[in-house]
Amino acid sequence: MKRMQFDRSAVPYLFVAPQILIISIFFLWPAAQAIKQSFLLEDAFGLSSQFVWFRNYNDTVLNEAWLHSAGFTLIFSTLVTFLSLGFALTLAVRANEVLHGSNTYKTMLMWAYAVAPPVAGLMGNMMFSPLVGGIYSGLNAMGWDFNHKLSTFDASFVVISISVWKQVSVNFIFFLSGLQGIPKSVQEAASLDCGSPGKRFWTITFPLLAPTTFFLIVINITYAFFETFGIIDVTTRGEPAGTTATLVYKVFVDGFIGADLGGSSAQSVILMLMVLVLTVVQFRFIERKIHY
Image (tube, rainbow, N blue to C red; front, side, top):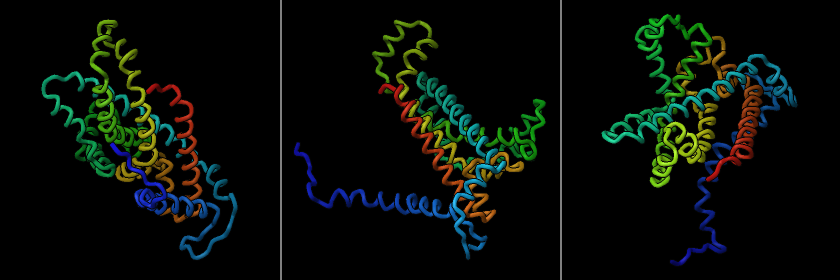
């Protein structure tokens, strides 16, 4: 088959131009604006500004509320990532063993994938509502004096539970695809060499899922950092007293509600650097242990 060549042609650039334009408009330009505004002290109406060097950054990292939000974000992201991966892997293993009605079983597990984060938050609001919430009533019936409006732990439980439920279906799809991609000959040989199903899974099956697991860790951390904004905004709005506000939600609160454009811009730049460092660590150190 003849290979297509585009030597000294503008055609390849025309193909990538729309994507470059989208990245420039929706990422590079806003990022540049955020970096610029992070060095400015502006009034609430945006009519005047003053160059203040690193004052906004200094005020951010020394602010107790921001430090609490950073700590909550790390705990929240870790729990959401590993709980959603754990539940999804368990469901994928069980679904891979289903012989009858497997298509119906898999379809039901994938439904949550189509639910947007704000919609998931709205559904969670109803399930944890003191008036009509079945989960709320069940928890109190078990002796847990559950009240996510006043208790920080209960509010954290709500946003983590909803975030995990929303993400399980995505992880399930990838884990199931990975399991079905393992050759039958390998599975049969593993059954002969290792009689214990648990040992067979952790020594043979799970290592073969390492590339899928690494990929899911990356996208789940990104999801926990950024895409759970809609869930938090609909359910707790960072309450009580801002204790369930993640870093990205605090940027929104301080910038759009508090009208502190300089401070919120500094927070967004710090968040961007944190995610960049975390990504580099993942690909420099964790990926080295992954065998494709």
